[in-house]
Amino acid sequence: MALTTPRITTEIVTAESLGKKADVRGAVFKAVLQIALFLTILILAVLIYQMVTGGWSVLSTRLGDFLTSPTSALPQRAGIAQALKGTFWLGIIVVLVAFPIGIGAGIYLEEYDHNGRLINFVDINIRNLAGVPSVVYGILGLAVFAKFLSGFTGGNTIIAGGLTLAVLVMPIVIITTMEAVRAVPDAIREGGFGVGATRWEIIRHFVLPYAAPGIITGTILSLARAIGEAAPLLLVGAIAKPGGNPGLFDLSQLRESFTAMPVLITDWSAEAKEGFVASTAAAIVVMLIIVLIANGSAIMLRNRYENKRNG
Image (cartoon, rainbow, N blue to C red; front, side, top):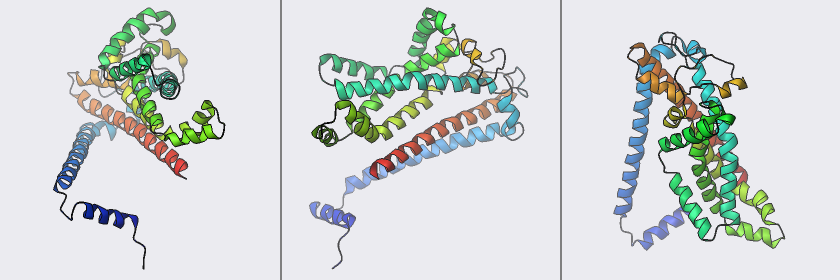
């Protein structure tokens, strides 16, 4: 007699446990979830369609010039080169500052010292900070990084903006790391201690590889949020029309006036000239592509580490 597959066995047990009655509540709940998923995809599709059609006159005729030209008061000559460079360097600073500190803090709080009133107090405040409006972090960045530490940052510069965004997403990175590490089964740690491994060896060789998919996904998604924030950068001093158009890897721009994609989009959306409507839509499309690439990279890395872990 053929063996019953696990799925069929599960369905039989479920049916028997429910007395062969229809699971009406479960069906309704599933339908509600499907409707929510459909509405989410529909809203995203409508947004992308509107932006692509609105910016098609720019994307189809002068895409290369649009990507490489500096900002301008004339919509037919305006480009996003400076904004792309500013966004790139802001992302680099976030990666170099927020990721190591956030991941390290999350591992410490979860693996080394996760008990006690002080740690619980710190944990609660970190979770509260993750929900603080971004404009508050902009005020913090203006007071600390742009003013108090102006000797290091140069004032209203990319360095000040990047540090502000790093502080903004750091609580998210910490929480994501803590949840990913917490999901690692205790049996893995106990097995490591059983063979005489130290705590660091267990974290390095067992805990981190197991938690890597969740950590990577959370950190990259937090980076996508950081590069899409406009309010903190406006408060720190980002402007829509900075002077000069240095090369991408010219480090001198880190201590000069700067702009970024969210700031430029915000400024163009308020322009009275009709030509900036298409330029704004085109810039939003480019911004969406950057965010989708970041999110896609997170999914690919997560799947890679999950396959490696399960394999």
